[in-house]
Length: 590
Image (tube, rainbow, N blue to C red; front, side, top):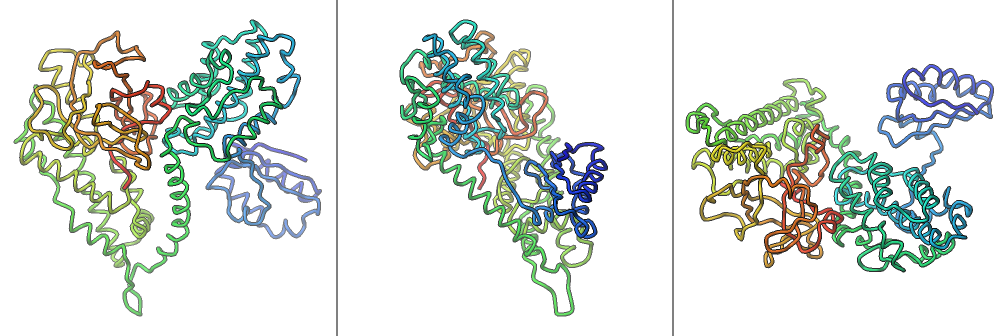
């Protein structure tokens, strides 16, 4: 058997190896095919070469290993025997796999490692069980989409193995676990090393501290979940641990992962959406096969033409930026005039792009211009009611389907038109801004310029009001905003705090919020256990533009989907809401 790991410049070597093995009856293993994107076409040609197939030695075999990849040749897949190696699904199967894999499968490493030292043995066995449980939890949270992780990380058995080796090294040295050091190594290095989103890093440390802490060792039958259904056995040797894990349910309640019961609905929606998207991919080609030009038997009816016509009717004329600049000139003490002008320029650019795209699709359908790839992609998306990817590249982030996107887009344009006609609104629609951060900066600039503070010395406090949609008058300080939603929690209007979601209600609307600029307190900035004036804990709630939460990582360490942190009073400590995946969204998906 000969093997080669594909990569830059390895294609010719691999081809020579295959031809040689084909002639002499060897086995060849091509590793990491997903890396050699440019060579996949050549692999397809070799596999479909009838000359090679006819002269192949009966003992010749070609093995290919690859991560899931859209570039792997379909014809090669169809004509081959396929095997997959996937991590087990479910908490029980995940933990069973860990205990039945190296190094825990070896009694010398695990069950008998410290059998003669009672204190060390207790710390070791319970510590291992907690880490295996943690490993299963972080993997299973991927099933819940953005509620579980902003980015679905591929945590591996190697992460668990290095954490166990470090734990054994610490216990061998002192017979106790230095939790502060080991939690740092496990959360920041072993698992956190692959975590790129700072909100996910905050989550992984929260989960680790909940499951793996001094109480894990000191308290018998330590609770690993709030319900108490999952505990650490008194003496979790490998045999005892596997026996205990066998009683775990096949489909655990989401609370074991730190999530609300509604997370199950999110998971089911995610699986259903994935299935429907897969079906649509096959149906799109059939729908798009409708002829886009007239033929001898009369014109073909194309639904995309009528869609373009309907949208074009609804689109308004572009904003006259010059007139707006005269009406709302740049003033040092009011940055909102500048914010308005910048927003109008952005929306004009998007409006004209959409209008031009719709007109070109209509012309292509009528045969007046060529149906270039960009127009064909837009046409296909329209047929299935999907927002065209080419529009999205020019647009603000959105996960809405085409119809809802157009309705939302027109509502944004109407919001700014009212601003132009009637002056600054009493309540700003935060979700309506193209670039939300520019508005937040404008609020800070107005306050700092009025009071002659440096802008980096000023921060924004958040006060949720009793107003649901509109307020009576402009606040004396700051600005009112609306249009935010909560996911993973709700706003309790009785006690004015973040509280548990109601069953089967996935999102909650936040009432009007007052943005209150204030001087930054250096001492409180580093305090993780801040409390509100009424004694309630504070949750540092992340605000995202869409429910996807993930975006392109910027130089600030935040994703492009992230807007800001919003301090909200809550009923439980911050760690609880971090584990819940609680966040605020500027818009929903429908």
